[in-house]
Length: 372
Image (cartoon, rainbow, N blue to C red):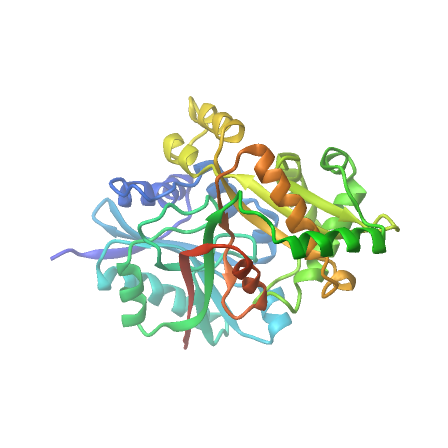
C-alpha cells in the first residue's frame, strides 16, 4: 500500500515538478493540451494578480514520485465584491485515487479555515480570464488552449469528497462559414448608419495605449453584473494583459466598433487554434516549439472565439448583430472552417445567440463548491 505525504511547493525544484506533473499524468492522452511551462511558472510566481491573491501550492508524493497537485488561492476582491469568504482551488491534478484527492483538497480546506474562509470552490484561476471549470462532458474533444482538460474520474473524486455543482459553462462548436441570416445583415446595416458606428483599425489599436485602456475599462463595465463571478481587472492587470495579448490580435479574426466620440462600443476577438501546436511543443517554445506556433498562426482552419461584448450604453441596442456580420465576413475571407466558442455560463441568455446558427455542444465545464 502506498504511503503518501503532502509537500508544500517552496523551491524552484519543487515548482518545476508541480508544473510538469500533468505532462506525465496525461502522456498517453491524445486530447490533453499541455500549457507552456514558462507561462505556468509566471502565473504561479510573478503575475500581478498573484501579488494581491494569497496562494499556496502543494503536491502529494508517493516516495519521489508526484501523484497529485493543487493550488489554493484567496482573491480578496472577489470576496468583497460578492460578500463571500471563499478559497479557490486550481492547478488540480491527481491520479485516480480517492486518498490522494482527499489529501489535496483537505489541505486546501485546512488552509481556508486557517484564513477564516467558509467555502472552497473551483477549479478556478485567480481571476476570470484564466482556466476554469472541470470538464464534465466532451472528453473526446481537444480543448482550446485556455481551457482545462481532465480525466472523467476527477468529477467522481470531488463529488465523493463532498463537493457539489456551483455552476456550469457551455462551449459550442459550429461551422465558421455559415451565412449570417439576412435579417441580421439588414439590422446591422441600419444600425451602423443610424448610430454612425465605424470599425476600428486593429493595427492602430496595437499602438494606441490609451485606446487599449479604454477597451479594458469598457470590458470591465460590460461584464460586471452580467458574467457570473466576474472580477474586474485592476489597472496593473490591464497593463499586463495589454502587453501580453493586444500584440497578438489578428485583423483577420478580430474587430472593434467605435462610436462618434471615439469610444469602444463593441468588440469581437478570436484567435487561431493553437492547441495542436501546444501538443507538439510539449510545454516549451524551445528548441523547436516556436516553429509549431508560427505555423499554427499562419495556417489554420479552426478558431477559438475568445471574447465578444458591448459597452453598457450599447447593450440591448442590437449592436451585436454588427460585429457578428463583420466577423462572419472575416472568417470566410480567411478560409476558417470551424469555430469553438469560449465557455459561457449556462444561465446567461447570451448563450442563446448560437441558436441562430447550426451548432453542437463541444464541452461542458463545472465549478464545484463545498461549505466548510
